[in-house]
Image (tube, rainbow, N blue to C red; front, top):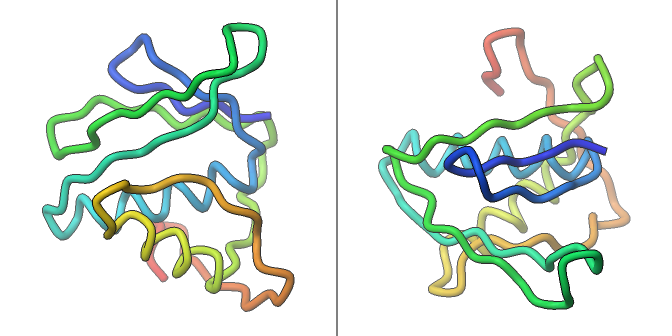
Length: 111
């Protein structure tokens, strides 16, 4: 289980595979200078609500992975998450599409 930490205090625990896809979407949006919301359901231990954060170029974010290997990325999932990030409601996790189109990523994080 990985962790997304925003501004040093707000965090979401996500599966490493999901976290890798979120990181790719965040990087692509910020590279283009496009701020957006990222929303997730809170862990039941802290309630049954949700948290939304405003992702912008000045945001401090940490993506911490449990595993040592980079999970392969599903292009269809990245595209679906990117489309959500482009809406007024912003990015939120949705189930991974059953069809997989894996992306090849170099060591510099580029597709």
